[in-house]
Picture 1 (cartoon, rainbow, N blue to C red):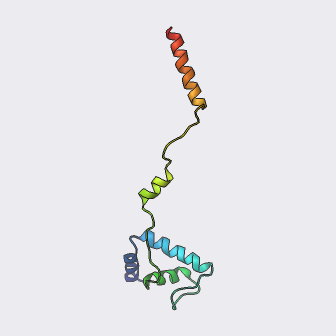
Picture 2 (cartoon, rainbow, N blue to C red):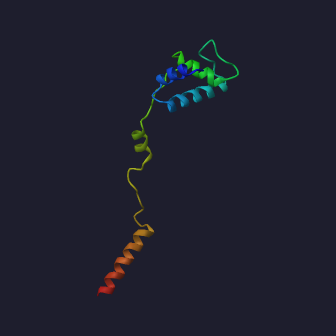
Picture 3 (cartoon, rainbow, N blue to C red):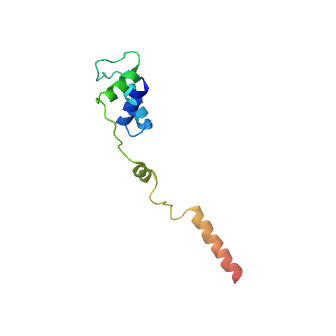
Length: 103
């Protein structure tokens, strides 16, 4: 592939990372037995076949979730501790001992 082909492929995706992920995912599918969508495929190199499919608009590259949406799903909304946890008991005992010392 020459430089013009690579620039054309990058124009199909938002960036190089998305292009490489899409090509590797499709190459894995081809390796596992999926039939190629182009007639001029390379039977020995599934990555080249995947890139040809992207170049011929047989494969569309879309971003399914943005980083903010993924981060919100991964982060817990609120930390929930049991009511009678060890930390609560220690805090109560420390508070009681301070009150006893004051008296």
